[in-house]
Image (cartoon, rainbow, N blue to C red; front, side):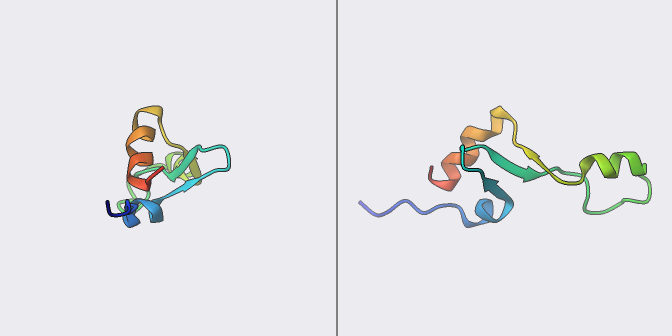
Length: 64
């Protein structure tokens, strides 16, 4: 049986903490920032914990 390969693209987008939580950048900060209020862009900055719905799928892609 060949080894499981982790999804390299997902590995570049998320970070796994020591306790197994998954941190990722929030969506909506790449382009079209002129029309968005600065309060929204400040709120979207920084990394946050990924929702519980997506955690199972992401861990499977990472081979964990």
